[in-house]
Length: 176
Image (cartoon, rainbow, N blue to C red):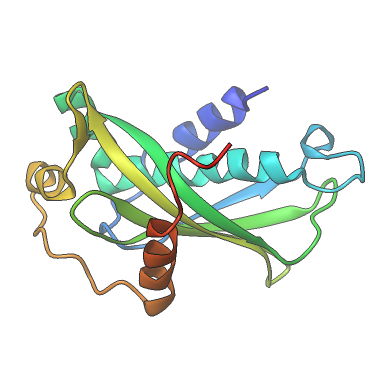
């Protein structure tokens, strides 16, 4: 089940947090609860993706994105991601999560998120996201104009542009 109560807690906890610049990191703290575990008693890989939502939504609030999405009746969707797992997370581990937007192109925003336990990175995700309207994808330039930000993206790191290029080579729809 989706962690609605945890999301409400994150929204409540960040309601008076200072605003963030569009590419500044939002830092949040979480606990791996027993219901987050898989059969091997470690953080479930699918639950990891869900927990990363707990960092992105408050980040969207603090950057002002959510306010403009509501005003324009826009939504947001995950359009792709890659996640690298490196350390096991077990029940009751305390995690620090960093979430930040690293740039954008003509269609998507790119974000990176990481979870840390006792100063050691347990996982790192690159995420491609799109703001949407009833007509489809809203170009980031339009979103940024609504937010009063310049449309020029910071340069995307080489590993991000390589991921974008590699993902562009994947056939869609996939072969059956």
